[in-house]
Amino acid sequence: MIKILKSEQVDILAAQGISRYPGVTARVDFVNELSAKIDWRNVFGEMQNISGKQTGNAIFSVYPILSHQNFSWDRVISTSFDAALQATVDAGARPLTIVSTQLPSKATANERAQCSKLIAAMNPDTTNQLTIVAGNMPTEEIIRTANSFAEVPLPEFAKSTSSRIWYSANISIQLFASRSVETELGTLVIAQFGLSRQQNH
Image (cartoon, rainbow, N blue to C red; front, side):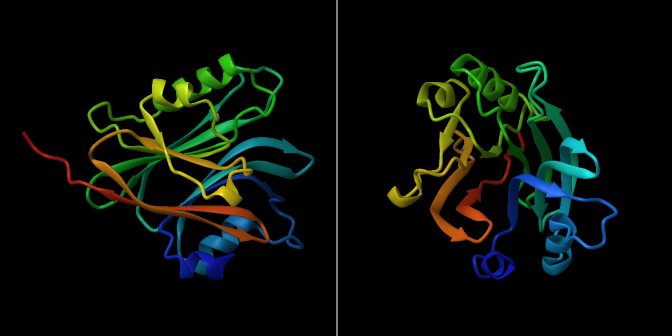
């Protein structure tokens, strides 16, 4: 996995459903190990913690992470432990909001729409609506476009994966290329974006 990330020159990685065992030295900690091997910054958002097994989402970045917050979907489906991790990174040209999320697997269309609306509101800067979302996002185009997102296209062989990437339908962010790579840890969806510098008026 590390070799693939290095060869693909990935700058930001959003991962979902990571299992960790804090304090158990016999188990490799995915978050710590990956960050140490690639010299990445990281934030982790816990979804569940049972008997020492911690499950959650993570965001890794070569860029400085300015802030982060974990959002639970408890108000959408009270019986679910799913959540969304939001981080703002200093991407050089301008700040960029990254969301790594795992939506409830049994959510209805209305609930998926509600989650998507909440994700769209996670950008803390109302004047800089540049957001990239990764996770099991809804397949309904009407939900995506209603929240002003575009979707990174997947090749035919990868369309069965639940992993999707949404990004702000904004002229300041441009998708250059996308592809998917199969790894031993699952499908890695890779997207290359370009950001325009924010104009000062």
